[in-house]
Every structure is written in structure tokens, then in C-alpha cells.
Image 1 (cartoon, rainbow, N blue to C red):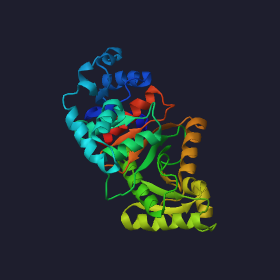
Image 2: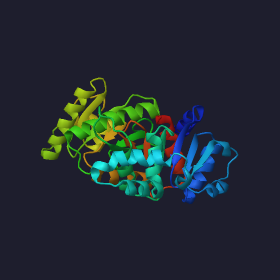
Image 3: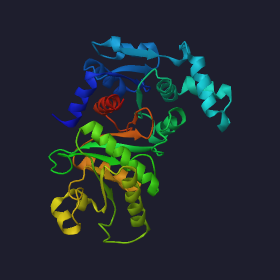
Length: 327
């Protein structure tokens, strides 16, 4: 069974309540039926009540449709959102308008108020839109101090990583993370890998240099991040800086790197910037026909996941399954 199949099974053993705010998207409607039929999660969908008639499922009892315009506790949601945003200059009227009309914001507030365990959005919103809502509405984990976007990658017929399974980060949020941010991204990504895969995370910080083979400020930033990450999480297997082949291929690691429990065996890859991370995951997804679930937004106290606007219904199902297990 694939890792994503296993994660769906894990989710079905303890289904959580996940919000899908984009009820006007046909892929989300199709995915909702699959999610409910397989008991992957219980769903709250935001929109008009007639949307439920378009969802093909035998488990309609596990679906709640909420229309913000007639929601009984809308004043409570608006009031809390206003308190969160008033220092940014929002008026009570603007807060009400935002909550009523922006379903992603409304859905995120349901998560904040513990009505749901997490949310999944992005089928017809940009990553920036989804992340912005999460930053405004959800509580940030101050122990980590950085929000990032990780991808769970499953590459078919791949001998590297954990039988072709990896976590890639940050591939969705921070354009140019500093050393401290990179270290936080690494620690949260290792925890995500452990939770999802159940194997020991081996964290490689990637660079154009392998263990001092090149120099420059970008290499220095990665080296500093490694030092900080090891201080934060001394029990994790963390190493670098590595070129990608040094991180993944044992034969190359034997040539380029000193003895390391990570070199040649990495399953969590930390990219030095968003350019490299985003380009790499999309190329592997398309050229190697890999499954890519995410961005799974990290650094919040409640889980939430973004979707690519090019996602399929299957991608929505996987994102909900992962978000449910993270809950």
C-alpha cells in the first residue's frame, strides 16, 4: 500500500472535522463524496445548502453545510475576527463583510473557535491568499516562530528517501528564509515526516555546496541554519550542507561527504529558498509522476493545508486525509 493509502486508513480510524470552504469548485464537490464514503473525515462545507445535493455519498450525515449569511453564531465570529484585525485598521462593518463574503476566512475562524479541527483550501485561491487567511485567523506556534509550506512527496519506483517518500520544505511560503527560519522549517518538517510516515526523519539542508566544496553567503546561511537546528533539536538526525545528489545517493555521498547518518539517506529535504523548493517539487511531480500533497502549512497550532489551483479531486482527498491525521 502507498504511503498516501496508509494515511487515508489512519484518518479513517479517527475521523476529524475538516472545513472545505470552496464549495463552488467541482473538484472539491467530487472529493467531498469520496472523503465521506471512505470515512476519511467529517466535513463542514461553506456555502448554500443546495450544494449538499450535488455531493454523491452514502454518508451525508457526516456533512454539515454552513451558509455564513444564516449562521446562528455569526455575530460571535465577526466579533472575534474584528478583535484580531482592529489594530490593522479594520472597522466592524468591514469585519462583518469579510467574514460573510470570504468563505476561506469564515472557515478558518471555525477552526480558531474549535468548531473544526483544520481546514483545506486553495483549489481556487492562490497560496498567498490561503496563507494570509491562516496568518490572520489561526494561532501561531511561538516555539517554532515561522510558518512554512511542506510537501509530502511519494515518488514511484524510487530507491531513495524512505522508499521514495519524502518531505520537501519550504516550497510554498517563505521566499528567502533566514538561517533561524530555515532551522524552524527543518524541525517542523522532521516532525511532519515522523507523524505521517512513522519512520526516522533524516534531515538534509540542501545547497550548491557539499560539506565546504563551495563558498559564499548562501552557503554560510545554510551552515548557520544547521547549527541552530541541531541546538533546537539535538536528538534529530540533521546534517549538511549537501548538494542534492550527496543527500540522496549513497554512492555519491561516499565520494563527496564525510561519514554521516544523513548523507545519501535523506528523507526530509530543506531547500535554501522558495525558488529552489517550488521548482523542484513541481518538476518531480510532473516528470517523475510523483504524488505531491501540499503545501501543508506548518507553524500553526491547528493544521491547515493549501492546494495547488491545478489540483485534482484526488489531491483534495489526500490533503484532507493528511490534515485530519495531523489533527
